[in-house]
Image (tube, rainbow over all chains, first blue to last red):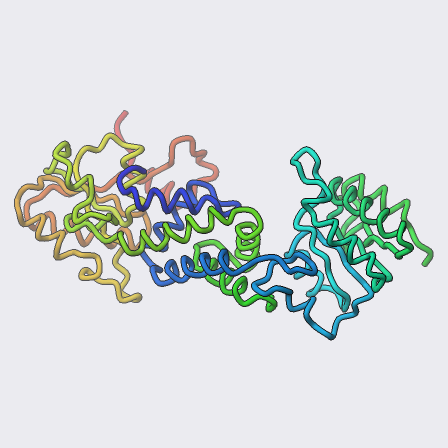
Length: 198
Length: 198
């Protein structure tokens, strides 16, 4: 670009959005300035308010503007079952798709020693405290089905079982509607080995 | 969503960006809050500064934070040739791709009577004033090759010619590297009729 520093800076900072490259950032900047200045101001305000107002829930670590998130604060959830997920977005999809009525624990990531993410960064001390309190009878491990997600699940499963707490892992296999021909070998082999009586 | 009003509002306002639906907006919001709060604050500031600081060039109507854009203010451009485009982004691509050294006029849109966009909304009075000043000897019409772009080009071409000013239109045809088999019929028929001596 190079003919308007303000536009250049806007384009550059739009690139902090995931999946936005130089072309889309430029398109976004022009769209906002040419057609939606009100929307741009609202976005500016909401970004600042969210960054300044959103912290982590003291019980489950998810993003929230309160000391405790609404799920942890609710008295209508079953406090004996704890579902462990990697991100706040995972809580949303599980809430939408399942009838789960227990509580969540959000790791805000997964074990990844090469990136310097160990148990401490994932709030494991807080999680183990929860397990030690004796209220929880089952930990559902709903981390991603990736190598890091599996390692993280394994770590927590060990901790739960050493405390005599039941630890379960969400099922892996062929997705509903999935055609065997198009499923990757790893999933298929897992699904085959994990077959169940009908 | 529904468990954090601040996040909900951020997701909602991210949707004012072109090409961003509910899923990507949510992904962007979580990404910023979990991983790039500094970037989010910078984006917030740059949005506000751009909206408050950017207006239209008094000579060519493009977006600029000054009274006149840097191209119009430059004394190294040929003031006798005026290239008419629809958007500020078009100026950027032409500057990058061509060796054009004249000035631009940015319509900030195209004639579209159904949307209430007539000559007035496109700053035609400003453009005709420029033509009347007698400095311009050629108007290059670089509006898009769409129905509206053609209509807009036609309108300006009439105005230029009635003032004895040369009016040219950028060439339409098969793009470089384009294979005939995959070119639409309209373009092909146009390219065929517009064939030139070799």
